[in-house]
Image: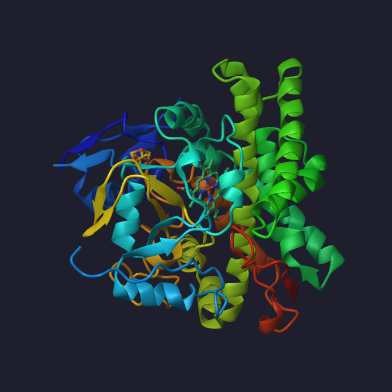
Length: 63
Length: 396
Ligand code: HEM
Ligand code: SF4
């Protein structure tokens, strides 16, 4: 699984960091998404899928 | 749409059995996700009740949230309200983006986690005071309202000693029976107070949020006043009502309450489920179409307003199994109680932490917590923009 995060779209709501804290963080500066792992470990994949689903701005995608 | 549309309805706010959405909303959602709605100024727009339709409108940039474009869903007041610089909830990009980007760094999951010890201390202090003074106690006055008020004051750098003043003004603003003149007076009162504060922060800076905004040099004093007003209003009435109404709801569901007491690891899912189940933002949000947009087969024309019923959406059986049952073990994340799209609640991670600390601390302190009056006598806030209880007398 590869994750793409679009910081231009991101509104810093933090749903990703809340849902999959091993994979997402937020920048100290403007709160936008930071990828801790571009390729999550298999046990985090379900959480990543949930994060993509709940992200309010559509900033996250997986392939 | 090929089918004839039903007659326009007006938005119901009164919940017949207290916590569940108005019966009409459920019936209408079963008939279709959108239907024509009559607004207070005579405009015929839309009411959206289906989960997927509400979510898609909130995520769609062809719908605007600008105050001057919105028709008032229930009272004329909204339309007469003046536009305020910095009140970015009512701005579209790029204006909205300018403010939101300045603030999101202050509200990250991590930042909010750092506030945990302080929120814990504030919560325990309130519980101590309750214990000293009672029983009985009014959970709203003694617990639910002071905690988020103290927290947001500290975060912003607003002296809590002034809380009587801004609490009165903000509750006037959220009261749907308030006349336009009263609302104007409350808004001016709040604005004057906060403007004075912003000016003072220029000469006497501290390390709280308002000073932080002043020091970026990106906003002028009226804009910072608008931001502070939005945060102050949104930051205390909302969480306060969740804490009180959530406690009421748990007390009415003793098996769920017992399960939570027994297993504190259920706290996070309980908070999400209470947010979903109670959906305290029961008026709007409202948006207006900037161009013709088809929403699930319905044609919303440019200039028409849509009211997104979060409470109907959060009880949509297409999205949540057995939606009218409170189940603190369910995966309720994905609920729309904080909205969706670019305006999704900025303060949600703070609200979550306040609730994740507040409910368990209250239950731990008072193992025999119960209502001190019959449940039927608890007065509900149907006349307020944020739903909840006016008072919650409890004993232990
Ligand atoms: C349980 C508590 C809360 C609930 C249910 C709630 C709900 C909401 C909802 C539904 C919206 C979206 C409105 C729309 O789309 O038109 C929103 C926006 C907002 N909320 Fe909250 N809120 C809560 C707590 C807070 C707190 C504690 C703060 C501040 C610290 C806050 C600050 C804001 C702000 C600034 C916005 C506007 C965001 C924007 O336009 O980008 N809220 N809230
Ligand atoms: S959930 Fe989406 S909008 Fe929120 S911080 Fe993560 S990427 Fe950004």
